[in-house]
Length: 382
Image (cartoon, rainbow, N blue to C red):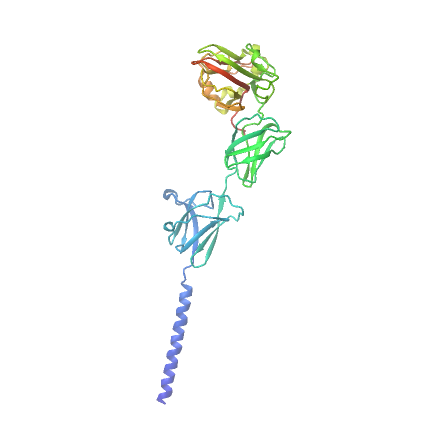
């Protein structure tokens, strides 16, 4: 009888031990640390309540959660981020969004842990649309190569000209596009398109707006002899009809009127300056194309535009400047031009006084060409 009781006690103890062991295993499983992301925010402590659903390339972000200490790798789309162990804690990970452009876009970040687990979270890498700043020359002949400056020029990429034709890409870098001008390219904005957006330029290709000196036709008081109508082999090529070329030695402080005159001598072009530019010069740029076969390295080129009478000291475009035989667009904020005038311009429906004068210190061995003097808006109103 005692033996039976002893067996019963041993059996009871064994069952109890099994029960306790099973319970412990269940508790162990249920208490396993599971990684979780609560939110993503900026890293600036003063803006810690600024939560993010996406960030741009290279941006440092803070991933906030729990049980994150065993993270060994983070991917954004198909690009692996650089993970610094000292920036990984139980509750946060500081990491920079990768700069390389993803090929496969999932709009998610994925964290891998040493245990083999992983964690997926919705997060968009905000890749910039193209930034189109300017062209080396806004006038380029069909079949020649135009250079566009800007940023975020990510392949695949297209450049569409006004009128619809697409240019042939010669080379594409992050900040420079070289594109062959297609047949049928018209005056107007260009459009650069990538997988991440489309941008229409504020400047115009072949900008024919508000031209007040073009030599097509020649107007003015001075020096029609400077106008080139039929370029020879040693002349710069035409980019928009006739152009002005000054090729001679200019003495120190000598007076050399190149183009322009009063409104009465320029009945067509003198009225091309828009009233809005006179009223708010800060919205406009003065632009023209220049080509130097010899460096502009002495004297001063003085520009009058939008005045009712001459101002001999007005806007001074000073050297140095050298295009090495290529046409290049010069851009001068129109408010800087107006700020140089003794008498501020006012609207004149009869037209304006215009002059290009070369006069200043130093002897200038000049060989410089000009075309398409114009006053145009800085931005396109959307």
